[in-house]
Length: 408
Length: 214
Image (tube, rainbow over the protein chains, first blue to last red):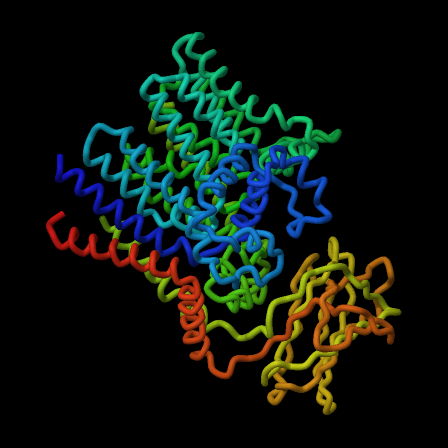
């Protein structure tokens, strides 16, 4: 037993060391923006969705988009706890809208402390994933796969969005569903959706997998009611409506389509989701198959929309659970992830690449982005489209293979 | 286990050597940070915008400004002319087709070798642009060390621009990057001590653990 514990401790500490090396020295502007918004909790602002539009003129950062309420409250509360360590200049750094903010003394401390909750949740996901297996070898495999795949380190600690919160809660929900603790499983999805909406995509799978109507109703109520309670106080705020109705996922999934005349469109993302949900209902899935469906539904969305690099964290725990069951899928996922990462790296946005190092030295912002470099020899938008088309093809094949081999 | 080795090496390269490797690619050293973007000044055929400034270093090689061109409405030539006090000049032309909205637009030119402490004036014109397809350049309420002029009339504040200089030697970039990096880290001494102690402690634990059989 001690040998096993030592094994986990060693690799956990090595994984933490790698993360500690990255945490203070890489910067994406999102972390500053949503922490600036969350800093108003300390000042007693409860409805940030109304506060930002009303005070826009006097605010240094004009960004009005706020994630769902739990992001605001969790990060705001964390700032209150961490404020003795962040120091007196932290709030002025958050409010500094100029390009000089990256060159502030103390920025390494701020980034390190702001990313600490991610480190905790990231490690927790690694241990949670081991709970899905009985075999010690498989437990160790998923533990290492989560902690040492470079994709999750880059996405969580360089691009530093809040996605690790709903990802952790989604995995926890899956864990509770495996333990047949359906109220907790539903609750975790409801809480996850309180950060970002995507965990709601998984509710139908739990619903279809439940054996009887009592379980189904429990899952529905425990996921939907907490979510409604979280958002209810803000439903009338125009800012909240903007954040929900105009959020990336909800608008992008219906932003592209194939015209069938008379103004009607066929949306590829919706079509794929319909197939996956229909299969889940028709084939009477069991709880062990839920990770396959969760992975497929997210992949289907990314295949058909312009996505943010941070979103790529969503399918990762499910992909790792699948590889835990069947090692042969590993290379397909590596290729899928490489393609998926290359697409946003080619966006015309320095914060996707060179300017993530700007806290080390702002000179990095003068480097040309991959977009600009490709532009000298080829149209980068066309290259992105080729990559996305390849991603679509490979994603479709993977979903088909997964369903075929799992006899779904 | 191969994944553990590969990822460990990847992260070490990314953090320790990545900045130096990328540092070799730096071809422009900025004079400072861009002033805040207060408002915009439109530019079309009837308008000429100019801004003077004192070069901070030798080898002045670029000026960058933030420009608005919504939906690529402007597809005409934008002319940039920079002249030194002693009459030397460079001219750059960029077509509106290559100016996305909100672009931080670089005007790159052959370096002025002995530019330090000399006054330069750059002028922006677009003779074929109509008012409906005008470009907009961000200006700032913050003053610069030069004069901001629109159609011969002196304006308050300055265009929100940054001047750039070619590095003397690209090897110097790598050294400068590491020097600034550690300088900035040690300026926050309590954090630096805490952070380095945690790193050293972790590495010590790992070297002790991994030296035993796994």
